[in-house]
Image (tube, rainbow, N blue to C red):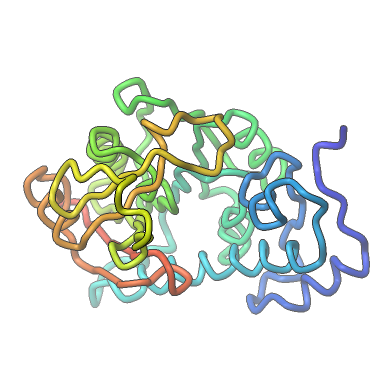
Length: 269
């Protein structure tokens, strides 16, 4: 079995022409055949079509655009440009956004990826020239000493149960450099399915969790499900944990869908 999905040359050109960024001539279009974001968009593993490819790459580019917007708007006047530092793409998957992140500012030597799926990390390292390390199921099991100036977490806190949500937030925050910035996405409460309330666990005010996900059993539902949180829940937890200052909140700030939060390390001057 091939490790990457075939994309015909004429479609590759069409995809590149559809992208907006100035990196489009260099962006790597390889998609791993186990990429769940691609498989989900193409009908959960059914035969893919042109729309599935186009959507996959367009969303990847839009995710990067959302990150850049969040960072630019959170930049303090006179502060060092955030683009000069190191970047950690945490819970990167198979690089739907990583491929754009590395090319936007020539960041190949600045980007590190991490994911619980070792094959995803290996694929990203080989395909996009980034550094990488394997993540773990439990936050306490992750042993990693590097610190990063920017950490981006796209669609991890949209899935974790309450206990793991809090533990992983603290662990990821601990990986920030003294002047670091953490950007992460969530499902806002406005996205919760109104017709499916009985399947949610209301463990804490502003936190809803359902035991379902798109990993087809790779990750168990009681750990990695569907999570919806309010702005108040996030704000209160960040303040009570002592892990960072919440400086920006964007409702539907990621691709006009997920909410985005920007956290600054408390050590910043």
